[in-house]
Each structure stands twice: as C-alpha cells, then as structure tokens.
Length: 139
Length: 183
Image (cartoon, rainbow over all chains, first blue to last red; front, side, top):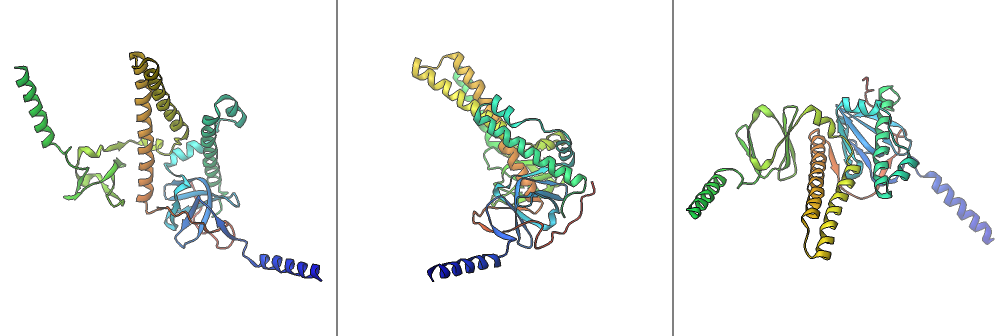
C-alpha cells in the first residue's frame, strides 16, 4: 500500500511538472530586455550596428536581429558592443586566428584565459555577421 | 633678485591659473545653456557632442551648437579611424597592462627591501613599465565609457538588478518581429 501511495505521489509530481510552461525559466545574466518587458538570455557580446541589435540566444543558439527601437536595455554583464558597419564587416569577414591548445601551450594560464575570452567573443561576432549577412538570422 | 623673479613667476602662474577654468568643475556651454559638473569622458564624434550630466543622464548636441567646453573636460574628438577601435576587446590588453604595473611596482619594492633605496636603472625600468601601462588602462576605461554613452544616447539602458527573473526562450512563445537586415 505504501509503495502504491509513493508511486501515486510520484505520478502527481510528474504531472504537475509537465504542466509548467517550458518556454520560461529563471536565467541569470546576461540578458536583453524588450520594450514589452520580455527578457531573453543572450551570449556575449551583443552587437549594436546602425539601428539594429544582433544577439545570440543562449538557449537555442540562434542569431536574432532586432531594430533597437524594440529594445529597452541590457543587463550590465551583457558586454554590448557598438560598432560601425565597416568594423562589423571586418570582424565578420576575416578569419579568427587562435586555437585552444595552441594558446594554452604558448601563453601562461592567466593570459591564455583572457586571450581565449577575446577569441570566443570574436567568433560570436563573426557568427552574428555571417548569419545576418546571409539572411539566416531569426527575426 | 632670484627671489624676486621666483615670486614674480609664481604670481604670474597663480594669476593665469585663477583666470583659467581649471578652478571650476568640468562644464560645457551649449546654446548659451550651462551644463555643470559633467562627468568624463566628454567627446565629439560625427559632429555630435556627448556629455554625461551629474545625474548620470547622457545628452547629445550637434557640435555647431557648442559654445564652450571647459579645459577640465579633457574633451576628445573621435576620428572615423578611432571610431572603429571603440568596439575592440580590451581583455588581453588590460591583463598585459596590469601585469606591467604589477611588475614595475614589484621591481621598486624589491630594490627598496634589498638595497634600502631604489637604484636609478631599476627606477627607470619601473617607471617605463608603470606609466605607459597606466595610460593604456585609462584609455581602455575611457573607451568603455564612451561606448556606454553612445549606446545610452540611442535610448537603450543598462539594467543593474541582479534578481533572477523569468527569461523567455527565443523562438518560442512570442514571435519576435523585425526587419531582416538587407545589408
């Protein structure tokens, strides 16, 4: 009898978990806030170029391009980069040099981490550019 | 005679200092309106003056309307070439500069501990490390502040609350509408 009650409680737990909305969950910084109040988790960096804002959603890893008129703001740790289209194009169209093991081997650990951080961000900017340039961004 | 010359030069420099605007906190005059206690950096980019008021509000003015910028603003004019540098990452540069300052300080401290005075060569070495590194870090900070001001001038803001709130996953729920970038 005890086991049946335990199993019953377990099913209730599962069913109540299944009712919760899967598209919303608490996520920490960095995030972007829309004028309608919605917050979306993003990967660093967020790029602002001309009148558009480009970002990578941290959950689905897709690139989004939005007019800045729709955006309210960003969290402090979003690492928002304002850049000219020429600079965006330059970063987006030049190869990102630097490989993980190469950097770890050559540079001291502390410095290597910062170089890797720069390279990762550069790769993200490149992804943003390529996706928006060739029209693959989600809008 | 020397004392007289010294007093004369001192009074001239004192007079010049009192006449200049170095005594006052940074201010700008735009369209005959005075904006006092502006925060650094004050800069002009694309013929637009960017200032941050004492309340933290970013204001922009066409440079043709600017009447005066005080010397303590240390205002900067950003050229198109420098504009492209604003977006560049500063992580590696910052850590190298910090290492430079740290190395220079250590060099002086070791000299003082072992010799009880800093030798000229090690002092010069330390200065050559510390001063350029400090300038580099100052420029990085200014660059970050300038970028932040440009972003805020576009009507966007930085939210400083640390509370975890509901964040919607992208691509689901509300459809994000926008114009596809045709560039």
